[in-house]
Image (cartoon, rainbow, N blue to C red; front, top):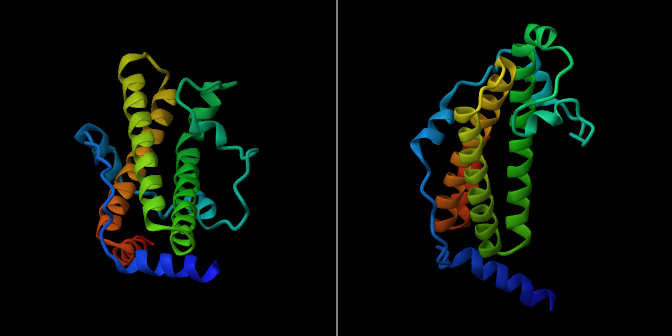
Length: 188
């Protein structure tokens, strides 16, 4: 039983391109342009969150910024003084999450089938694209405070970054496992 599962996985790795007929979604330019903003890699807040070895938990102080605006705040004036620092910390946190998700996918690929990973990337891509379009609509239609708008744009930037990364993953998986692994090695 174990041997046949190993043989099946080895065959799937060697056979090359995926033959699933999932349709690649169209990524609007208005969404993808948000992914090109540079990261604040010289920021101490970015570096500390990005390189931290502590697990990210549900009680993380930055967790509530992963939802759509408007955001509940006690004092907008006090928050605006720390806005750049919080944005840099969020960049670091989201970069680390992105890396952790990618590592989990690479491990998943080595332990499961290529087609399952291909379907998962497709599902995540569709989900993130839907969220990004909704978030962009909120940012355009509603009158938001400066903090809500800034943090909403920040969230949209990261959704766009993940969409572009998933697009690369999708294209690499269509070519085969080795291309997928190469993309991840180049990314990180």
